[in-house]
Image (cartoon, helix red, strand yellow):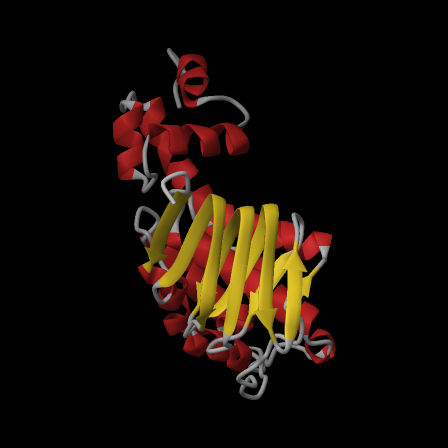
Length: 277
């Protein structure tokens, strides 16, 4: 076991979502179960799962999906995988927000799924949930990816529209925009935004994107950069500008500044020297 490489963390703003990155794992796990739904992206090696009366082998590029409280045993052979454990009540809430009835206890119909697009989405989500980025961006990515997962594992989800609330969308979007502009330096959560509108998270993300042209987290980033530009023009040190505008550190500010403005903060400051801005 000493050769294993393990990283485990939780995200409180996502209902204590549990995440694991494991590498170089070779081990036989006895029969057991998890309280959560387990979603694993296999990167290397093989995972042989004994469940539902037979063995199921997951290889690199496969997803291994195990239902909450589903009894199984595992054999890991030189495995590397990234795992998300979603609490049952969280998964049920996502279904309700999509206007769906309660999920069956054994929701995932297939243990091993080979779907390159879904695999990449889940892998990108896991990597994003490991980064120092805003809670709002992580929540948005999580909900969007879980919706894709539901659509892939249950065909009935694909054709059903998100439940909507007639009218007032413009009012709700303005309310969210005003909140983000007033709280641009804060680590705003999606729960805070939905409390302003009474909309489901999915519907809020959709109507906001359609109206503003960005998802809420990107809108907030754009506002942060606008304020950072003013601070940089006035000679504020980059580390202080990053702190005052809600970025995690100077490199976080610089990456987003270059992406949006097209030049680094230092280049921007140099170009604005001796100018009346």
